[in-house]
Length: 321
Image (cartoon, rainbow, N blue to C red; front, side):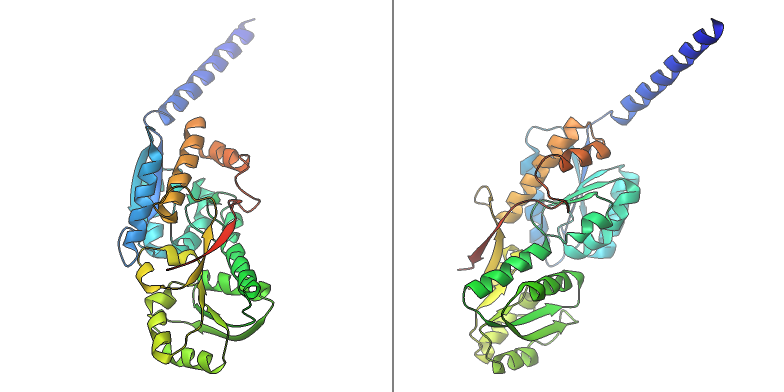
């Protein structure tokens, strides 16, 4: 009888300690980190992400901690370590840029951090993260597949592909080449974002292509459109959602680009996707009392994401006026 009493006492003590620890862990507001490029050449993109996040907060008591990923992998890793180690954050919105996404995805598994990005990303990052990386827009692979099919559907049977030496460009290039059924007359890979486009555009002009696909924003930051005009290369340009970035808009007049379906409001897709990501993550975080494992399971069973952690959202094609 004494042994039974002692066992009961020990069980009660253990339960009390667990309850106390749970109360301590869950005390205070739930914290969500936000990684966005708040400085540098695409800082206005980061500011739209910030505005969308704040709009998505509503009346929630969730605390947001914003960190600048600078659209740079090293800066993003530093900001991530600060959020997860110092701020004890296990739920993150962002980053918005591709190289930070690539750098951070493998770190999520060991940290048990759930990340929901408000922009397109490679579907390989879900596996790289141990199933902790989710994307509210669509995958880069599906985006270039859509563009490839749209270009051919519109009668462009001979095209040139211009990309850069980074993971974002490489992912788009691979998918485009796998899915474009016309003639790929030229594939240009520029290793330097500041590379001179004139020689390559001159070669493309001489090939008499029907259109050009330039998925990377570096093409436009490198004044690709102005150089085409200088050469008299008046061919349609297709690109990705990068045309929607604030810094790119003055440089992409007339460009065709992929755009996510079912975007709410009239403040632009960057704002709308950031707001939507925030609302989804807050709902799960509050339901799960901030527990990241519970949030991950909730996202997986929500019906919003496919087997790659990517939103089931569709595509449309738009043109910059």
